[in-house]
Length: 352
Image 1: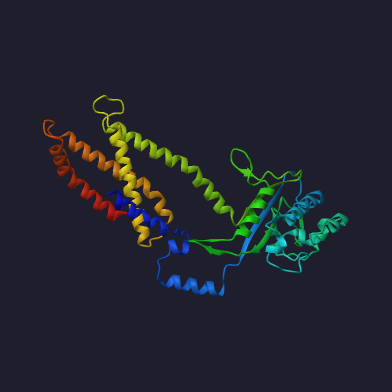
Image 2: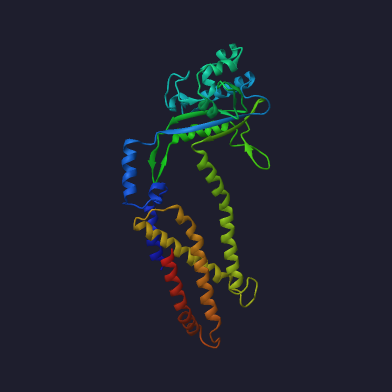
């Protein structure tokens, strides 16, 4: 048995994880797959984004001190570097807005230049004279108030959006963009988003500013949030395993009973279940099945099914005549429990 388990576990040498959504959730060999592949050839995904929202603590987001502090934040973004690559090295180029990179912000009215903004005695008039449409102003400013002529009068928030190149590559069964993800991580760390200031109902980045509160979101933010939640559940999953094992030990005969204690037997049952699960995973990998997120929840299911089978066998053993030999009692127990186990195993096989 152990040699068979070891042979099956050798399949882990063929381990390959698959987490691409288009491979996991879209049926393979369908028209949808072919259309998606044809579209990607001609229009490959080519951008990442970072959106920074600056909300005025008090007053107007278009006041000169606010704008100067916002421009100072932008300059810090410019200075960030990951493995020698800065903003200008990864951004999508678009000239004509005062910056070689594709940036969407009202700070473009001053060409992202500290000297130009410092010398401006009427920033509001400069912004209204920059030629932005009403729709564009409302997209770049939060809670903006415009007069009948389309001139902005006041705003409560200001956004800065950076569009960067997507240089993703296939890494095993998933796509990765090491430079883009790394630069975004450095940016979020600089803004203090990895160490946020939280109240009862919301969190903000801990970037220090007298004039505004910072909120930020990048392409990697979704995966960061999901990863943090999943990582927090790992402890709960391990606790569930321990509770189930402890329950097994107690219900097979008691932990401290001098005669009926079956703690070692329960431990042996757990080892058999683990060996069976590992063999199943290994055999699947020998057959070139990919490891997907669904497989990560199967150990809990396998343990539950295995524990149930252990209860069935031990209950059948307890119902046999204690005057019989151990061999005869085991034969009778398995003959009675085997049918039930076979039926449940077949239904589980079909279901899962």
